[in-house]
Image (cartoon, rainbow, N blue to C red; front, side):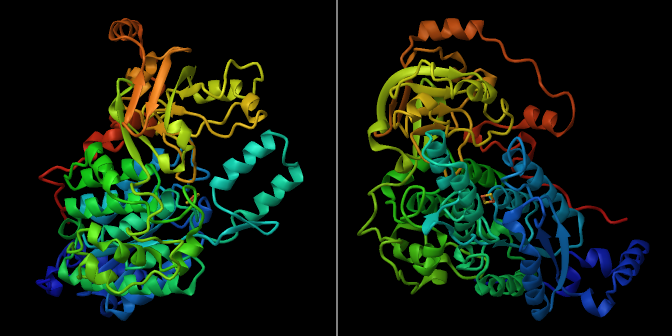
Length: 577
Ligand code: FES
């Protein structure tokens, strides 16, 4: 890669600190208030460490140590660190869903990067929405950044049995509802399922999105697979600190690295990992910030030709500990290099192919090669039909195979509270063939597309031993979830999508091999129902929720805000008067 190295006067931070102006006096005097002399920072790249540490987010509780590692690397390379806290949006506590705050984090990250004297930044995140949120903001601002994932937590344990984040919660909750698990056993599982700092250690949304950030070329190679408590995590953080100083001098920013071909790699790796369905909505939103269109058909086309290679829960057997010691993402990428654009640039200044050259797979049952895949195609399919004119998503790799071609009568829940009030009713009119539907749970309806899509199996059926059935919704499901759940139905019911028109007893056909989701109701009858349909009155009169429902786009468009999409003229640099 040929680069033009900046002079100190060309650094962005020079505008704040380097000039002989009234405002620069103020900036420098307040730097002195912070204990910094000119020798600390003037003429050096100033690197933001955007830290999502928060006591609200247990996945990120070690990020102060990670930030110290980044700081060490920045200083070693001759830069100057400036740590700045940003919104954390922890997946567990943020309601109605952390997805509601993804765009808020993206706005904050963009404006923090723009409004401060930063020449580059290292972004610390990992818990689900923090990865797309931080990167969407960074793409829109477009200064050099490196993403530093927090790393997965170590695997869970209960009475000698391995527990996986999320996946085993859903599994054992059903057993508890069936009367097969005592309160004491349930509490023991609570003790053992989250044993260290770090994000969920299944191939859920966090593990998927950090791996895709690395595939996009934005992470120090290998860092996304390193467990949070492994000493290599902090060494990787220091490496990120050193690299970002170099990248600030060379102005190696996202628009120079991330292209449509990088996103094609990310989609391919998502399919090879059996990654979270959430990755689709996040990748579409991230690409949109760079003016790159990712139609859902691209995901389906890539899914049909990329084999499932990672034997990871919930679609497979292993957890991130095992993935790391099996060689991690670099080994997977090297093993499937013939299926990737290996010539794309990364934050190392080298290509993706150069970064993973020679990386070996040490545990071939954990990470397969295209010659010996778990299944010949990818883990996620895109559905079309009269029920989802703008698409729907299903992770069929984690569904009961027999349910992937199924026709059954609908049982409709109008909202999550409606579902919750009915699901344990032993008189519910439901059989194993019923298709459960949840509506008013999409980007506008919920709002924020919460992870409600793995609807609970009705208690009546749980007691009969049923553990999976076809479920449809306009929301998302956790990447740690499993089952025959078609999600992200667009347009959503709250804006009058066909899901709003379904009535109990209507026949619905799911046909994953043929990518079809069809409501067996005539067009005339649907037109009649549509003419009678009325939107709910607005729920929000003020605040972020009002902004959200007025501007969020549909799932197939990434559920980003319409006014944050890429604009060729961008946003001007702030004036410094
Ligand atoms: Fe943070 Fe799952 S709760 S990654």
